[in-house]
Amino acid sequence: KVHDLRAELTSEKKDPRHQRKKVAMKKVVANMTMGNDMSPLFQEVIACMGIPDLEVKKMVYLFLINYARARAEIANLAVNGFEDDVNDPNPLVRAMAIRTMGYIYVERVIESLIDPLRHCLRDRDPYVRKTAAMAVLKLSMFDRSLVEEERFLDMLKDLLADGNPSVVANAVAALTEISERSPHIKLKLNMKIANKLITALNECNEWGQIYILESLMYVVPQDSSDAETIMERIMPRLQHGNSGVVLVAIKVIAYMMNYVSQVDTLEPILRKLSPPL
Image 1 (tube, rainbow, N blue to C red):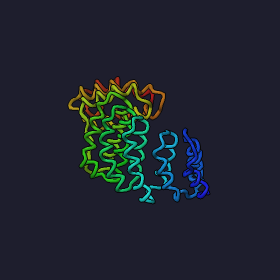
Image 2: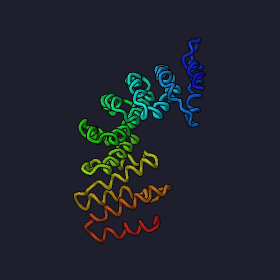
Image 3: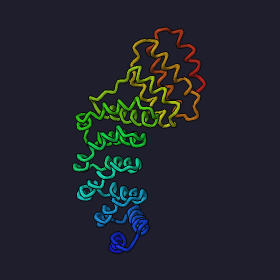
Image 4: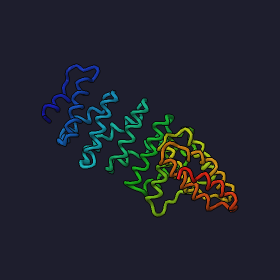
């Protein structure tokens, strides 16, 4: 099987639309998912990184994610291809490249990831930015101190003010998880950021809303009015069709109630909490 697939991947027959390579890569991925070892084909597969076809690139990246951790030489050979792809005109290719690099915990790949990741966090395309935000989270699992040294946490915090709600949700998710995993990195959000996050809620999908609501647990209101403002603005989430959103909204409201000084203010809030509970 491996010999036949190698022949198909290295065939020099005219293939202007890369159909033969695409079919061969589909066979490689199919064998890989069935548990057959396709790693001997790594040189031939990496040679396909230069093919300007999105479907082929997806399959090459699947191959790399599957084998590169165990075989560092595969990852090292792919570095040049990654560097080309993170500068590709197509935002889908840039995003796939930065996501895949974040999955490969091999030193040379991680070293090559730093500068492209910095650029992708500021990319003009929101899909690339939101993908880069999660790549920071992946990088922190490999080397938390590197993420701090390269000031990626500050860049994630900047994304909290991004105009795209999906980018905001991913930045929040990454910051929250990094904070929960680290004994000395503590996420603190002020009211200005909290208001921006709540504004993004309406345009987020359900999971994005959950991430944003969870992040409000890191807001420390300066006075009773701050807490009341947050509760009032997230109260509509109690009517949401997703039970996960409702439960997190209840948790945030219960947390904010600790900062309300007037008991009379709490009574109407408690009445609104009763139906969803």
